[in-house]
Length: 374
Image 1 (spheres, one colour):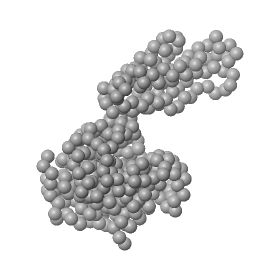
Image 2 (tube, rainbow, N blue to C red):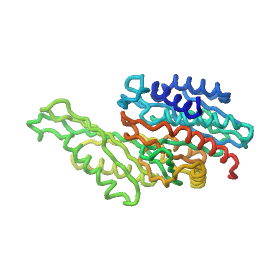
Image 3 (cartoon, rainbow, N blue to C red):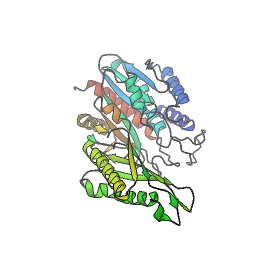
Image 4 (tube, rainbow, N blue to C red):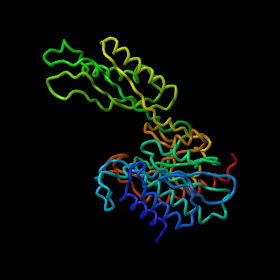
């Protein structure tokens, strides 16, 4: 079997058996088995799911990272290797990322005697719920590591194309929940109550002014209300309404500015209408900020490997890889996967012919990074 076909076969097997965040037990077993069969050294990290492997010897360590979890999405792609786990799908391509890094591990093992140090390959659980990177760091996966590299497949790019950028790349991801408490009443006598639905509607409209009128137009901001829940029948004004949504930015200062403004608007409307409005924030990962030097280095190696490279646009999605970059320098890159449907779509179908090129790229990137003078 050819190297390329082996990677495709692994990817398709992983695709058939997707597992949710922190439930990746069979995925972990498969990855461990494939690594051990290739002679890779597995590190004894205390992880229920996820694997950390290493190849080479020496003091300097470069890390590569893949993510292994899937999403609670019922697959509709129609491919012959579709998910066999009902309601769970690799709709973000983590099966692609895992297989590419498995391939890089094999290539590095074959060249182990020539490596100028060690390459540590992280197969991370729980990227989708933004908890896996912290687990790996706590388990010691970054100890001694000089720099780290990772990838995301990009369905909007053709196979053979590559993009990255120095500085901010992916956005921070914050969730908010707003509880609006008025006073319930019969729908025929609204004057006896304090309409929480009317107030929630005005609050949604007011929040739309934050990005358009309170933040510098040159800064990137997404502030979206994505869920409204209130009432349970047609002839009663409910006492409470709950709103939920997300905030995405690329700068800490802008992130805090928006949060402060949302809190001000909620407090002001509550006071004006004699209602209680409570805003609760749930912070996700910070913005992913690539090291300028390593991003340029990663793009240079991609040029050498035959990729058509681009300067990446800012991405408003979130990525748990950001947590690693808060600890050590490194770079995150996009590799074209040419899917008609985008990430998190039930018909997402990346072109897995990208795997051989991606594996060879990351193996070469790690080899050259070990030789690079910091």
